[in-house]
Structure formats: structure tokens, C-alpha cells
Image 1 (cartoon, rainbow, N blue to C red):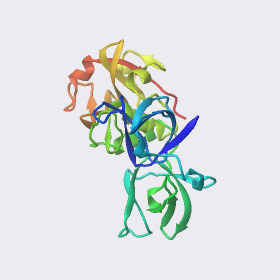
Image 2 (cartoon, rainbow, N blue to C red):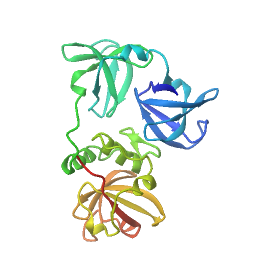
Image 3 (cartoon, helix red, strand yellow):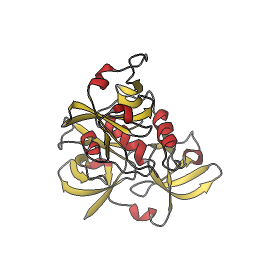
Image 4 (cartoon, one colour):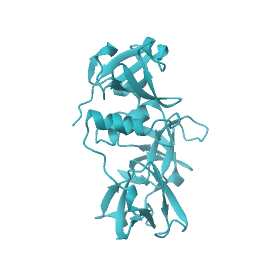
Length: 263
């Protein structure tokens, strides 16, 4: 099995080995992937969630990874930050990095951490941008989801640079250590609770579609007939007609409530 890592902050993954092809998912800096096939400019990869797609070979690294062996890996908690060539924000920026990436820390200097980048280069990130997400629980899931309010919708997206509906859900749960499948229809196949939206509790997943057999959208329940989802942007909506953010479309297309165990 040949392994590689993503060497950019967010890599776009395509349905076919063509930049004009549909973007179906993304990868994060230092995310490890399995190489399945190589062409002139693209590699077909498998990610940890089992998803297969094509990525630009220039956004992968297969060398320099040994420099990170044995180091402490820290989670980037800030939504989007820069990695610099020196412990000084006036120095050259080497990468940007988004929440969810884990970086190997080589050294620390005052308020900065020296990190290893794929390929073996080193850079500096302010230590305040590292942190951990609290244990998985209803409040933590809801709070983290609300941190992303207003971020734009982007097909195939799973970062603050743009989320699609299932990428948003996968990211929120993944940051809590709960691994979900990539697409809404895959997520909906597990842990059915009810086909009545009134039975949803905060933290449950809500699924929507043209029919029960064709799920195309997912949201996170906030309880009290409210939900948060990536729909144009990350936003809150309501199933209740008396609310100003009532969404009749989502009431009509509702399919099921599913519950992934928290904690």
C-alpha cells in the first residue's frame, strides 16, 4: 500500500482526473491518503472515510514524512491561519492551515511553535491556534456547528473555505472524534431514529430528499424544531411556520432523524 499526504491547506478532489471534473471532496494539510493509481498530473486516492477521488499530484507529498516521526501532533483549532518561515508574522507565509489539521511540532519559541510541513520543510505557527475540541456531547456539537455560521456553501467542501451539507456535518462530528461517511445518503443509512421531525433532539442528524430512497441533504438538529445546515451558506432554519426562518421546502422534503452516539 503506497501512502502520501496532502501538502496544501485544502486540496480539491475530483470525480475524474480533470480540473473541469466535479469536485467531490477535499483533504487537509498532512492528511494521509492511500495512492491507488497515478496519471500524468493526477493520482487516484482513498481517504480514511473510504472515499475515492482524483487529486492533483502536485498537492501530494511522498517524501520528508520521516522528519515528523516521533513528534507531538497538535490539532489546529483556529478556523484559518498562516504558517510562516520564521516566528514573525512579517516573515514569508509558507502555507495556510484550517481547523481540523494536525501538525507535527518540532520546537517551541515563546508564543510560536515550529512545525514540520510535508516534504520536510519547517515553518512557524502561533501556538494560540492549537487547541482541542471538547468531548463529544450535544452542547459541544451545537456550539461548534454555530461557529461556522455564515461560511459559504461549496460543492465538495468540508472546511471553512466552503462547506457542502454533508461535508459540514462530517467536519463537525469528525472534530469530536466521530467518523461519519462522506455523503448525505451514506450518513442516512445508519442509526435511524424516526421519520417524524418532531422526534429530533439537538445533535441528531436530519435528512431530506426527493423521496425516502433519494436522500440529497443533511442538517444538524438544534432541537425545538430548528436545525443548522450548509444551504447557500451555513445557516439556521426552522420547521415551524411561525418562525421568520421557516423553510417550507425542508419541511416538505424531510425524510428521517438519525442519531449517532455522542461520547
